[in-house]
Image (cartoon, rainbow, N blue to C red; front, top):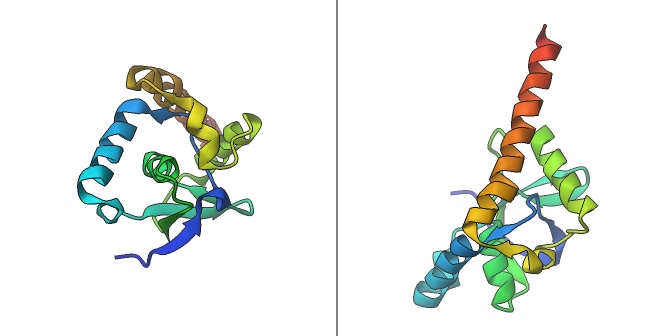
Length: 137
């Protein structure tokens, strides 16, 4: 298991623009039944001088809405598409999203989340892949 440590929610840059209501409800249900310790730590990376969520935005939002200021995190050492994360972080910064609390007004129905977030990411990843194919030629 990777070593977890506490980090202030305001020190972590989101890399997504929305939170799914359905996913958030399921995380809040877990917290209510089993407590915060039932949630796994959230993976983060350093990217362009920022500490960035690579996953766990819903868990971070649940912690934020519960009134806590810190969340357990660990350094994500998985092989990631950093170019895609840079694009997502730029999207967030362009929308003024600099911490998880900035997503409070972006908790949306899961059907909207799939369209507004998953589809946007899918198109971005397809564009990146096409760009990379051109570069390999």
